[in-house]
Image (cartoon, rainbow, N blue to C red; front, side, top):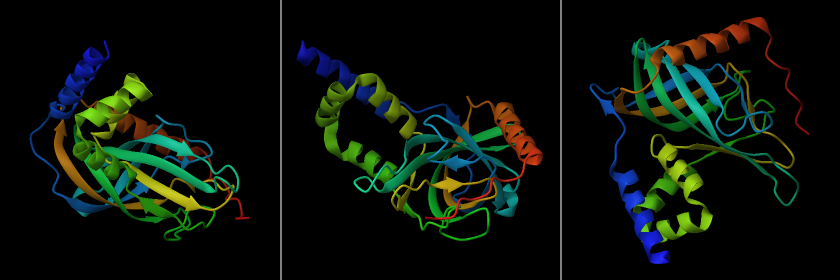
Length: 232
């Protein structure tokens, strides 16, 4: 029975690794983008699966386009034994008008909503990670045998879903080495990212993404940005 399970899982892995989403048409030229966050991201309030948006400021030919992403994992700092906070998120699509492109985004720099570089809202120095890239490289190099065993041990549904999502966009990891602190970025924070396009996403709901961005901007217009908590 176990051998049959492994065969089924191996076949599933092959299908996931060789099946490509509905991408096609023109691609966005690889470039460095500066984007303005229009929805908050934090280890205190964000949950895995939450959607966030950002508006492109640079380069000029893409200014006003909307980046959409999702929170992948949140790990608030707990105590001295677990002093790091970590939030993993992926910027997955770029929408211009009625076209949406699937993208991979590699974080280059951050500036918080107060204009301070390389720190979050509490002034904590952050370090970017590349956990998502390492995971994808490890998967490609580890072989189907070990990967199938991991799926059987850890639950096929959750790990398969994680792979399917992770394959669509690199995960960006932000680490804070500070005890009992949260990572927080308010709307108005700027992320500098290197964007690589996989082509137009034929299945994307471009109008829905633009509506989400408009809703986020409407919320921002109705209330001031939250006051930051002084670092302890």
